[in-house]
Length: 191
Image (cartoon, rainbow, N blue to C red; front, side, top):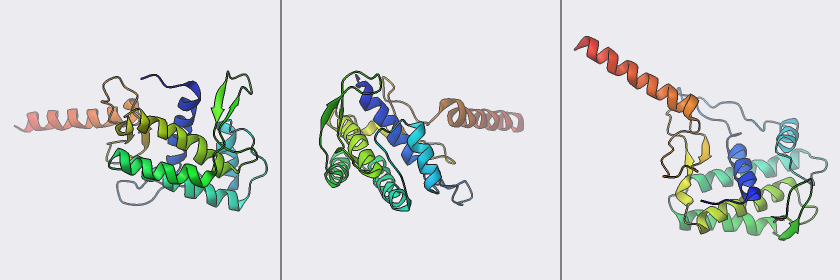
């Protein structure tokens, strides 16, 4: 599947945004919110090179948390039609204004947010359109959640055969494989 550079960046951003939400641990207790305050939002903006963002405040934080929750719904959508409805709502609310740009050393690409848009509208427009690209390509099922029982992080399965099950095979996948191996060894020793 060929994904343009700007779409890939937006997909990575939306995954990282969704994964800032507190994750319940195995005991059912919620974790830490990766966007717990305005400083964390500034950090997210910096680490993802989100352009055109000025001063941020609590209003921006609340708006981004709302967008994050809506994106999480897209990852949980049971089918393409449900995902499309959610994406359409997000993108329409952001007031998209597609523009070609070639800033900061990147080749030509499309920004979907309006000039001067809030960070929440920026994320909703650009990341929403990246998710729309996945639905249009018939690839909505690639928007997944980690199957590790103690994880649940979002990821985009870009494997050739759509077989990825874990957000990170070195951590979640390996941990489960080691646990299964140990269980089999223990059972064989007892049997």
